[in-house]
Image (cartoon, rainbow, N blue to C red; front, side):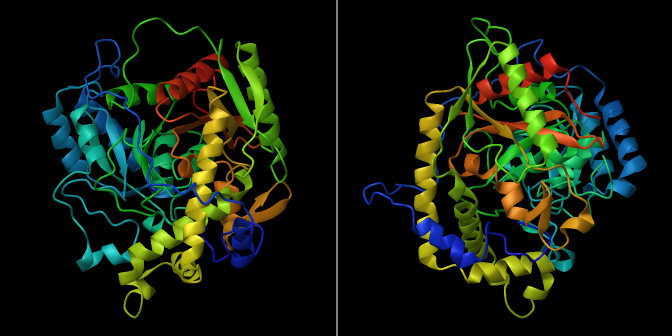
Length: 485
């Protein structure tokens, strides 16, 4: 999932990688009954009780400050596809500080419908006379408004969410570097201080990758916890809506406000990580990986132990197959979605990188897509088996810090003294949670020597979103790493 035309599959040519999937022994009786894994009961649509809402502040003043910050720095960062200043001011006037979000200004990825604003998906297909202006909010945007948020505008996305660089957006920590993607605009807008909450979408890490690169907190709930209607797809069986916030504490308040997890109640949880078992998948720190990432992750595990947690090794035997299986699924489903746009008059409207990916998708046999879905089913079972003995899985979010834009122009990413494909770098730690339909999150884990953010990822069993967010907030409070800027 890169900005260049390099082959996206890990370890070599497409068909060589697919052959590795065919080498996995699968039980013929173990076919999945459905591609989409449903979510267990949970969450809440109830309003927050007093004391669990966002701090009170005048909505009009909040929106004006957000607009001032955008005007001051977005000329360089370019995190916004559209700023609806007048619409935000009018909504703030009507808001009156209601709901648990109390007029909080928010951004929405330009893949997600906002009534009356164009959804362009970063594509020329949906711009100009072809532009798509929805009459209704996506379900997740309606949920935001019901909680009292004010939509300031649409944040940039890599074209059709099919990439990991989000041009022309720049990383606020170093504008020569990419913000990641495909929700790069949402992460950059939060990291730059324009807003404290933005919506993104995540198919193979598209909330977590830019969050790690930009030093924000990111969270992808269990399937069904946030509505997915009104969101243009990349790969329908993997896509989920997620949140990007300035801090883990902001993330917790936002998740409560949106009914993703219930407000805390009953017996208080023990302080720190006491009683929690944290699993680290075998091979997590295998090369290639930037040395600073490995060192920061080891320090994080030491912190968990100091806070009373137990860290244990776990096995996901076929975890190595995740990148190839995930990319095969993404290529097949994306090609199906864009088939009518291909050919004369349509192909030339795609960016060169997306067009190259769709060309590659044409080479994927139908049987390979089915095989990838079967491997996905196997990986879900292995992930659930690992989680049966622990409360959470922990990994770095990325094997590297945000690369320079000119270093990834060919679709390769420098990692640990070598180069790997963008898919291999970006999906390495992230794709499993999408394939297995698990809640997951990332938070800042300090910086490298140049001040570039490092991310720490948590993954939980289905429906254990609250455990995941509790761990994130506890870790942030205990280490002081609430936000790297």
